[in-house]
Image (cartoon, rainbow, N blue to C red; front, side):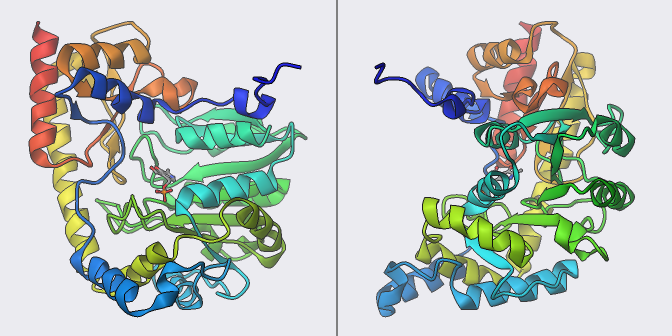
Length: 389
Ligand SMILES: Cc1ncc(COP(=O)(O)O)c(C=O)c1O
């Protein structure tokens, strides 16, 4: 027997290039990053204080919480969902606190997707959605976004549906394109899911980071949609809590009872100190979120100006949310992985190859403007010099 045999499930998946590039960069040294989606901001002080005080004064702070999460936190999430998204969910039966949005996504996908089920992924799409569908032994079906604005093409989605289609995983605002899908299109996609009996797994990790208009509709708030949608949220990007690993999931009780089994088998509960941080985030002043959003909007503008200044090297759709832009490059016909490696070695700038996000991402790079303005300027200075060399 080959003791090194790896399961089919795991051998089918890959570590995303988002995480691979920084590892390569570390070996090169002296690189600046337009790569991974980490906002540069420090965790707000009132959140740190709340966690320190709890760790000092409350012995429960270092112990497991209830599996579903601290009751006060679930209630606070329910109030937040109602106020911010007009979503009504019962904190007892329909809200789960998870180890980041990532665990929530995996638990949802493992619960919904059976071996061989087809899952529609608007493409380009978040790389981990692809890997998680593969891990569940599902079949990712890439439905191209509209090229001119990275918008949802609901007609193309309908054409992609077969008797084997089970679910749609959608991320709005979108990583990797930074697009904010129109409410009209989201509702049309919801209607499509209802008509064809599909489950929508709605990744709302970037819900607070919208620059040019109101936040997008949450499909759970649409009449008749609640049963068809499992929503995933995160504290990571909104409150600069990426390292704390805390997120949430909402679903109807029939789904939640099943999802809980996966959560129990994989995580037991989200880290209690991180849950205390999340509670402080929700109860504390929202000005920190607004300040970070404004800073990211300025960085978005800077990133677009710097792309414009590179002339016809790149073309791009101006992002309306999250902190990514996904330009097409015109200075090379090489695959995006090669171009990202060339930029890494030649300019010492980390970018992520578009192919990481499905076939429709090929020919593009994903750039994150989560870093501060100095880092963005330095990265573009270096890319500019490299292009001229
Ligand atoms: C679209 C999307 N979903 C989910 C996640 C996971 O976030 P978390 O840190 O909450 O696990 C990320 C992180 O980059 C993301 O970009």
